[in-house]
Image (cartoon, rainbow, N blue to C red; front, side):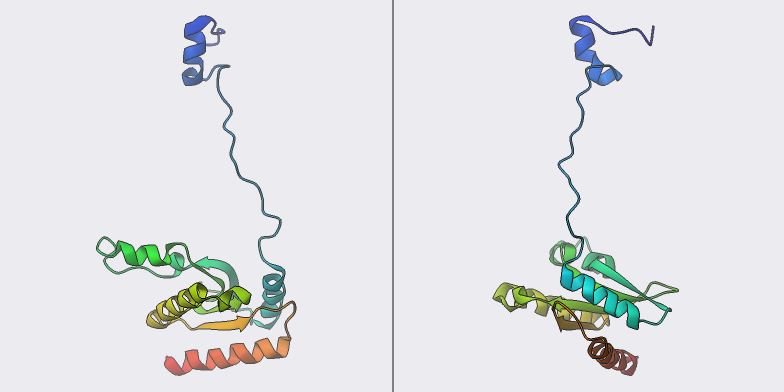
Length: 163
């Protein structure tokens, strides 16, 4: 009688547990954002993609917790929490290994706020200590390919001089 219809008070009570008609539909409060990246980020992404050699990939919106680990995490929960909800706009990775070689932040007007400047100083130091260069580029509606190429080359020279 597994397929029999459940009726009565007991049937209504047990229906959610037994997969019957009384199941309440789960409503998720999520929707797709209108834009994954800002217009400045989209423009910058395409410029950098056009510059990068094929042995590198450009990744967007990377969480610091995906790039870095915290030593002795059980003793350093506060340190983990400080990077848990932070991200950088772009990371250039080696295509074969997907190891990060450089990160990029597009600095819009919010980076002028005191709290944001403190956040940027902290993030800059995390990258410095971990040995991954992080460069800041002013956000713009459009980017000059030659200027971005020059900035990336300068940062790349620093990377190679450190190694």
